[in-house]
Length: 73
Image (cartoon, rainbow, N blue to C red; front, side, top):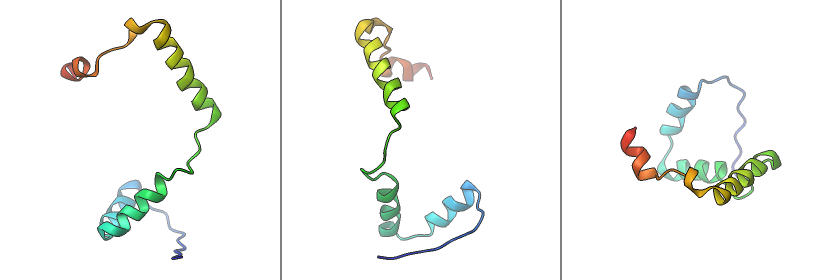
């Protein structure tokens, strides 16, 4: 396993520029690490999503059609 130890302060844009210098293969590795299946969604967030799903089931007319909304943006 490859390891890298960094202790540097970077702005988001500086980090982004550094990542852009990586090979496509290494960028994919970073992407996979960030979006791994091991990512846990906090219970509080799960509850919010479930509440919103329930609200949409109880009152489906409150939902907006994305195609219609995107035309107004």
